[in-house]
Length: 337
Image (tube, rainbow, N blue to C red):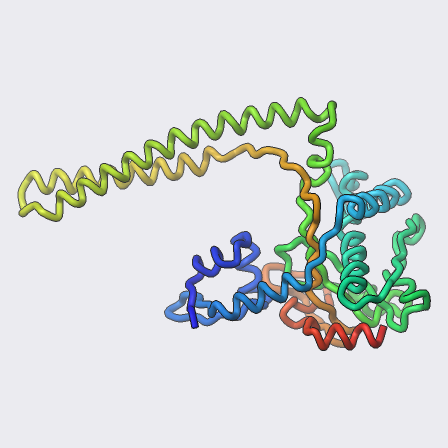
């Protein structure tokens, strides 16, 4: 059974480093062991996690994304964007719509997952509610009848690991649900710019940014060539040094190697700091919606903090590792629904 070090495991899973660290340290959804302070991973455990992620992921089409965006836009323009603070004291319509769209896409993802995996048809509440915002329950019918469970969806970006509920949502009989789903939505943060990238009004900005990226790439390529040359020269000096007997000449070569090492480190820093601009990429044709599992009312932990975050009062939380997410868990949910 293959055992991988942290860097090897990261390359094996091909996920962002920040996400990986959250999954092993915060939620602990990827099991690991520590040997001499270093994380070690069994390849079979990485396969287990990856396979579970893949079989719990559905993909929304551009048409489905558009439906979600339409509803999010309606919410942004039918409810005064006063919650939270922004540059001018309130969040803009764009910020409000961006907040809404993740949750709406999560609901669409659950609908698609239940249809594709279990053959049941659920209907969602897809009407804007300008007075109350949204209804407490997200599923309004199952195969044409009322659901037997109250279901709530919670969406997050892919790096996050916890479902967090405030006391009102968890304790208020009018708002609390029987089951809370947690979903990771892999929607690029610049999704709106990506949609507009070909628009004539936006095209000039996109092309200007592309020009800057091209110039940036030229600088980085030049630095890379210098690095390659320095590393080659350094290796040649090291090989020469191994064959020399103690002498003043050998000391001079040692000094050259030391200086060269510093030059290489400086070039590496310069290369890294040169990466400033990036292109506006097209929006993916399919957007992954990752169903991480669900938590029943009564299974949450009442806390005032989670790794990396302190709350200003009590919260009800559950990490991805503690959620119901086995095939048996899902089958039981479908029967109860």
